[in-house]
Image 1: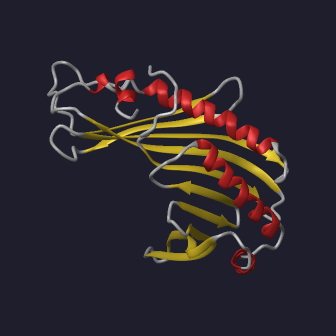
Image 2: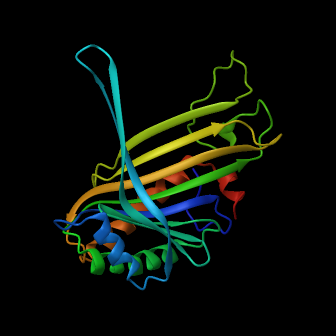
Length: 248
């Protein structure tokens, strides 16, 4: 495994903080829209967020019938420099940091500021889920047929007798931290070689836990620190020291 430390050129394509809530009774999209548009968040509204549903039934005469509908459930907002994307939804809040990623402290500081806007304007009843997710694009200098184990630990390898030129793979685990009950979804994926001698491997680490706390409870941010620590253990435990050195 690689030693845990700050990587100056971390391969993070998106880092996000997500909080899901039980909304106040009677909150509608129109109410959310009016409340958020009137807030001084420093972000501009990009577009509404919609949730679609699809139904398939058989009519009495045996003919299939389909029905689809879309409901607006929130707003997507962007920062002026386009580096942050915020989602204010009926059932929660998400803040994403796009490249270049800076550091955890800046992400949390901005999340705390916008979360205060969400709580003030929308008055959610309870927090029910807390998550942080980091999506990394590992640009690994591998030639066709070379082993991915040079950079990725415990990746399921191909049998020696099989062709060694890997074109795509997908590996996903959902893991439970026995001490806290928090969970990690750890995904590794390759969808073709982007260039000769370069393998773009996606390493997606999603750390989350259920919750039942007041929206203003400062325990929220303590939980985020624990999830971050779990995320770091999973990330650095997945890559080798040689992989980490690529991003120093």
